[in-house]
Structure formats: structure tokens, C-alpha cells
Image (tube, rainbow, N blue to C red):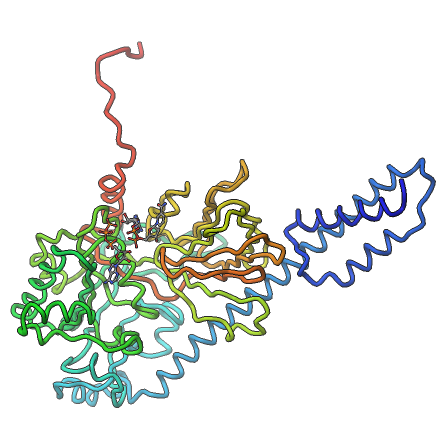
Length: 530
Ligand SMILES: NC(=O)c1ccc[n+]([C@@H]2O[C@H](COP(=O)([O-])OP(=O)(O)OC[C@H]3O[C@@H](n4cnc5c(N)ncnc54)[C@H](O)[C@@H]3O)[C@@H](O)[C@H]2O)c1
Ligand SMILES: Nc1ncnc2c1ncn2[C@@H]1O[C@H](COP(=O)(O)OP(=O)(O)OP(=O)(O)O)[C@@H](O)[C@H]1O
């Protein structure tokens, strides 16, 4: 064999091995290329021994492949770590901003607080703060919501529309109920290893209950557009909440216009002017009511980029997996919700960042997008297979070659992920579903990964086409070769009210909505075991 042929065989092998090992041309190959060149440039032995030499080259290439994969994993680890740090930095900055703007806390000066908040009709800017910073850290960690939250006065208000006429935001307590011990509180020691024996506390059997400490006063109603029955119910509900329960009511600008077209009576319904104002809704809204299907619940969740008030979803769609409440019985249902306690499902969300190729630091990239169901990375209109490299923290997971990949929450497990062959998972189970869409491989089974991982989905530089990311089926973003999507569990879940409890509601949905395992029961007559 001629030297030039051997050289090109070796180079092709090196390229294939790099591909096999999930490593691409764009990775810093410097020293490795030099090593390959040295091997290639070694004098050729006699033609007789060429096959042995090729075997040896293959071995060497395998080693090179391994090193390349390790380099890629190290890069992914560094990027995941950078994302994690950015996330921590954002949380810290948000906390500091709130601290800068705050007056004395309720814990520091309860008398003053009562006077300020209770004494005036139109309040100033309200913010939620844990009872004391130290207590909340001990209780549930930095973003825990288990601790009792107290409202404070936060100085002059820059969002007059959403803060006008509102007296104060209701405070509430969450309680983790255990089936075995009725009065059991949320246990923080999940694993104990006293005297060398490892035991785990009960976790999964706990239902979360929300108890109002002060009555809720402000409701945001979000409705599915273009539906006459929804419009009629919305007008009815708004006047009932105002007349019978003296609630402050917020609706979307579109809905306010629709109500006013009907009658000027609805002038009391409040709204917001722009997105900037809308992002502050969580500071005044005690409860969100949705009238529509699952899409309206997704829509409601997307309006809150941080903490989300409890959502009460009424079913006015066709499937209604996340909408357990019957609209015909809205009065009775709202009465019991407003009085509490409410069983809730804390639905986890995923936080996604698109990282553009060549961006020096993550701040150059677009802000995070939170999803309640899933983020999908697919081939869009491209006819080429998607080629996606997937990393979990610092480990290479796999390369997806097919139509795409779904990263789903457990709430989203019954949506697109289910259609792509993923498991159905109870929404209270923490985890990230990793479900391929039409993979061109016989052995690509879906995975469920633990909640703490950061996933990075990279479009390789040598990819034939672009990929497209979509978030809860919306906001499609193009991912060019070199771009990546980084995804981890968000700090702010979506609390949705249950009709029964989170498990009975989930089972009801899969039975009623999906007709899960519906089969005629086998008749009694027929052959028997003797
Ligand atoms: N092949 C598929 O099954 C497929 C394809 C695209 C999108 N989707 C899903 O649609 C969602 C967007 O919903 P939409 O209402 O805005 O769009 P849509 O109006 O197209 O409705 C999609 C359907 O998915 C159902 N659905 C949504 N979330 C669900 C959940 N968590 N569990 C069970 N069913 C659920 C809805 O009830 C509806 O019937 C996406 O997040 C995605 O999960 C599914
Ligand atoms: N307030 C809203 N403003 C704009 N779009 C909305 C709003 N609420 C819902 N949508 C969108 O309308 C679409 C349909 O909503 P939804 O799924 O609630 O109703 P549906 O399709 O009738 O219900 P189902 O999916 O159960 O049949 C979704 O894509 C959703 O994102």
C-alpha cells in the first residue's frame, strides 16, 4: 500500500473515531493532531507487515478517540458549571436588589408593618420575603417555599396599574401531609445515617396542602381566546367574584376590552399596559384562575418568570390533563379554594438558555425561558436528520440522530413526550425526561434523569442542517451549528390546585383523558385452572 493511501486511511479513521466518540472538528485538537501526524509520518515497514501496522494504527486511533471524548466532556463540564454559576449569580443579584429596596421586615418591626399595610387603601410596592433570611436557609434552602412568607412594604411604586386599589397580598403556609402520621411536617432530613444505619424519610407519600393565613383578595383570570363559552363564563365569574367575594380582579388587556364592550359595569376589572408591568403581577396576585384547556395553563405559567401564585384551572378544552375543575360548578369550587386549605401539585419547570456559538460569556445570550411541559429540539422544516450532541453535567450522554429530542418535566410526560414513546410520570416526581423523537437507531430508549443535572444539547459545527428549539410548543428559535441549549430544573415551580389530591387527579386524568389501559374485563365463564 502506498504511503499516501495509508495516510488518508489513517486520517479518515481518526475522523470517524472522533465522530463515533461524540467529538467534532470544532474541538481544540492542537496537540492531538500533532500526535496523529507523528504516527502517520513514521517510516513505513516492509509491505508484508502492513496489516499489523494498520491494526496498530487503529488501536492508536481508538486511544486518540478516547482522549478527544474526554476533552469534549471537560468542555461540557466547564460550560455546565458556567451556566450553574450564572444562575446562582442571577438569584443572588435578585435577592440583593430586593434587600436594597426593602424597608424593615415584619419580623424586625411588626407594628410598623401592620400600620403601613393595613392602614392604607392603596398600598405601596409589596414584596414577599421569608420570615427571616436565616430561618429560610435552614428550612428549605435558598429558594425554598416551605417557610412562612410575610409581606413587606417595599417603598414607592413604579407600576401604578397593577398596584392600584389593592390592599395587600395574602400570605399562606404550605404543609406536607404524610399518610402515616397526620400531623407530620415536611421532613428535611431525607436520608439519615444514625448509628451507621441508612434510612430514608417518607417523601413520595406526602401531599402538599396550602393554608391561607390571610384571606386572598386578588385574582388574575386568564382565558382561552376566541371562545364564546369562555367569554360568557369569564364575565359571570368576574361579576360573582366582585359582588359576592369583594375580590380585586385582573384580566388580560384583550379580556378587559371584551368585557367593556359588553358593559361599562366591568370598569373595575384591572389590567396592565406592557410586559414590564405584567412581570410584576406575582407581587399582587394571590390566585390565578384559568378558563380553557391545558394550553391555557401553559400560557398562565409562561406569564410568571419567577414565583407563580397558585393556579386554579377550570376545564373548557377537550383533554384537560391539568384542568381538574368543572366550570359548571365554579362558585362552589372557588368558595372552597378561597377558604382553603387547598391540596396542590407543585409542578416542576425547566429553565432553558440558548447559547450562541462564539458568545464569550453567557450574558451575551438571550434570557432564560421557563417551560412547564417541555423544550423540544427538532429538525423543523429541514429534511436532514438532526444531529445533536447531549451532555449531562460533565458526562457525554449520546448523539441524537433522528427527528429530534424532547426534554420534558414530569408534568409534560403526558404531552409530547408520551406521543414520542416516553413514560408517563406522576407530576410530583422530580426528574427530567430525555425522550428522542423518531431516533434512527434500534436501541434508543427514553431516559429519566435526576432533577439536579444540567443538560447541554449541542448542535455540532459539522451538522448538515439547523435545529429548532420550541418551548411548550411555542416560541421557535433556530439553533445554528455551534449553538447549544442548556437546560436545568428551575427554582420556581407552578402550584396547581387539585380537585382531590395530586395522585387521584393524575390517575383520573390518565383514565379519563387517555383511556389508559382500558380493556373489557374477561368474562367469568370459560376454562379454569383445575
Ligand atoms: N405529537 C404530539 O403529541 C404533540 C405535538 C406537538 C405539541 N404537543 C404538545 O402540545 C403542548 C402545547 O399545548 P397547547 O394546548 O398549547 O397546544 P395544542 O392546542 O396543539 O394542544 C396540544 C394537546 O396536548 C395536550 N396537552 C398539553 N399539555 C399536556 C399535558 N401536560 N399532559 C397531557 N396533555 C397535554 C392538550 O390538552 C392538547 O390536547 C406542547 O407542550 C406539547 O407537549 C404534542
Ligand atoms: N390567554 C391566552 N392568550 C393567548 N393564547 C392563549 C391564551 N390561553 C390559551 N392560549 C393558547 O390557545 C391555544 C388553545 O388553548 P387550550 O389548549 O387551552 O384550548 P383547547 O385547544 O380548546 O384545549 P384542548 O387542547 O384541551 O382541546 C393554546 O395554544 C394556548 O397557548
